[in-house]
Length: 325
Image: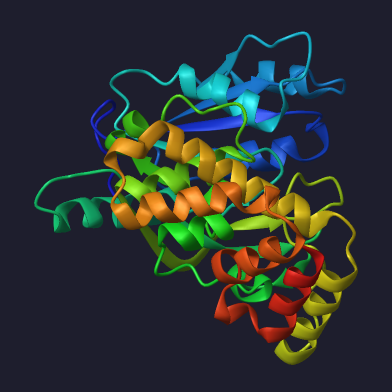
């Protein structure tokens, strides 16, 4: 793909860094190896205590890399990405998220941008759009775990309805690319939401469109310190993997309730920001989902079964979720 002239199709990439020294160079090298070269990488050092600051300073030898001033105290993932979000230039046409420990396939930006442009061209009016892709799951040394994160995690990315995105965010932040219309609609990122990518995906599902590209464009590194990610190496057949996920849902203390609470917070925040542009069905769903975590025991389980569970997760996994909710 022939790169666009600078400023016409520049992709602005936002990456928060926190104690990322071990894997940061791999990520930076993979961005610099992109076949689509018209990009700007914005980095924010979230009070790292390792050698990340020196690596970030050296990275600015590439004029396409900018490191924002860091804070004394860590802001956390959402706060760090909110800082980055606020520094996106007013003329930026395309914006994406990135993670410090992943390795991008060389065609990652080219594939995502082509999909985004095609989606824009297919619409009579270019509204808010978000493109995301599948990922290849790898271990700390980049050893293969699973060729598809979607398949191994039981993610069905389409249709990307508001209910599906709020209950189980199908969008992984490091694969995302959005147009300016979505950036303007979604910003600023509220600090109380569970994750920055969940917020943007929720806004896109409510007021725009989400396009899934069924191709792995990122080597999704799992190393034990991920904020989120794949839970384990995938070696079992699908049936055994489903049984394992179901058993985990039955026995993992607090995790399911935390996830349900996060969905409730996301729903409440979306409703507070966008109630006037919601359809009646969207408003009813968000209201019910926001109330779900605080309902009495039996009512909460019924609400989780109705609002949070999806058929493709299988009856065992859904039963485990309802039991733990």
